[in-house]
Image (tube, rainbow, N blue to C red; front, side, top):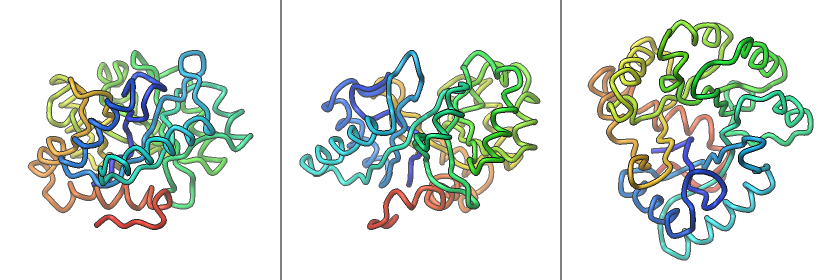
Length: 246
């Protein structure tokens, strides 16, 4: 399986705090069937001072540690970009770390504030789509604005935005409302990928299996596997030019 949303790079956001934690998370991901991971630390000006360059350095160090520890996880990195007007500036400077490509556009994992979808957010996503950037909205099923009114996500679907849903949401790990919304989006064929959004071993583990199992019950094994294998590989295979999914 391929995981395109995780916070394993050590010491640069609210995920793994050091290399020991990062390696423990990586070993657990492998044990749960993940072979490839695009690490996506927060890109959140004013809170986490990450840049494309600093993220690239962090993943190089992490990959070397994985090799030394003999943990067979292929890693690369992008970012989970917080909704902000600065994204336009970063895009114009070619400084956005992209998860991959989809139908000829560069895919940006875009996070809205957890409490809401900002007013006129579709203006930014519309600008992105017109400028060869494909927004993929991170964990909409856990956004309080969408949880209160699922129709808040509709304008973004109509634009052509992609959705990344947290695998644990489908399994009920974030409560019944998030689970119901994740199932609604799944049954409506609105989810492009499932990802772990892993942060730690306590309650945010890098394990796609519970979500995959629930998706299999709801839409069948072939369709469910597309969300953790086919679609993420189609999107991110350029991060792993000398590896395969086997």
